[in-house]
Image (cartoon, rainbow, N blue to C red; front, side, top):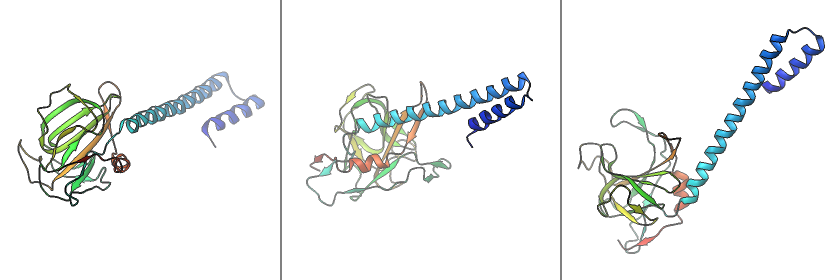
Length: 221
């Protein structure tokens, strides 16, 4: 039985019997109030999460790797490796999805922005290699990592349009700046949603990429 219903039934019984003191009634009502508040908080939290995810899906425009109009063999593939174990730098979970390249050549595949937004972070990270992070208009953060190079000298705050080339797929990372060859050529895609003023939560991009597979720009490469 629902805890609220249990307390309500108990209150009804003891009031009918007249065998409870006033303090116990107040204590039971405090429990009842706490339960109601907890359920309301959980509901509010779910509604916030739902609204946040609707915003993410609403701003997705293009798959991050265009289709080649020149080379039919230049394809991509990805699997749901969300939260899979990674060991470089200690055990950790994989907060993203890797888009793998059929043509094992760094700098060959262009990487485009999936959304409109602005550059927030750009440059080298030990685990991510050359990366770029785009903050969307809704406040969500799109992270593109292991790039071979950038399409231009991006500056923080610079505006980006969905479909604009950010850089080129590579195999950088897992070491000091310039490290390559520690893993196959691929693009790591991460999506993070805000949790207040200074916190973010990683969400699984797998189904977003599945959705965007039918929304690919065509580039000559």
